[in-house]
Image (cartoon, rainbow, N blue to C red; front, side):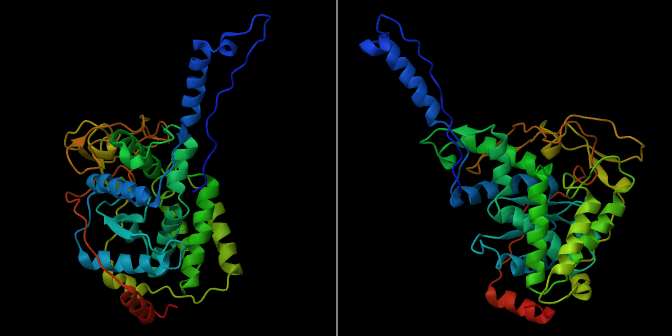
Length: 379
């Protein structure tokens, strides 16, 4: 990873007839020198691949605790195979790629560092075929391969570490980074450039193996229609560039591409994915200020049905509750400010989660991936 500029300190000195203390070897030189050395030892957040994977695992734990996990091995194996087909074609195929289906009706997806990709059952319900799923997963996979979540924390500059300090060697620092990453990814705090990059490279990944490159635009068009009554950007990609502009760019890219095929595989998709979309107004909500990603009280989340309103009441961003320590021991409460600032409740992000956060283990190898591709006519 590229090392960012080290913080420095400029010391201005005024010369006088009498030599200053630092020239005489006095204590003043020592104090200034120590201050300069201390400032130069601070550096912006950096991490090894191993630390990135450990961070991603902990972030995934927090997200799973908040939303729960669909306990269906067949669904997880299918989503994993689609994701694996794409991931092996990236520049980071050896990450421990993990694909998790979250148990909430909100339409959303979250990419955590180190290869952890989450998609909600609400998003799967809105998707209509395998090519659309590949487009969404390709977008999230690119956030991982290009380390967008880590760069978002680096750009924010809120976390500094000593020159000799490692992320894995400081539990307090590690937990702070986990909180920042969860806040960033659940609020989709990526730049327009990063979102465009994820669109472009995600569509490229899907087209390279034979999926229709137009599929992501088809899904986003449906998502745009779902959000047409909203006064705010909601759910999946809320901070992305304007939706129609993105759809147009993807369409232009698809037209210019020479993909390996144009498979959509709607029949295979419906063989494994049978969720039905839930209208936003009918999604059970978690009140801001309750446990989990919606707040830090530690109490059981309050549920409610969202009432259709012309304007949502504005509330402060949510905190991060029940943060698990990196050692897997006692949970501790911490707060992570939402990068989106004051917002009303978002049914896609603040929807009620399921009761079981237990991951569903899936093991696939290259033989499984190749058989899956052959069955679907992929390359």
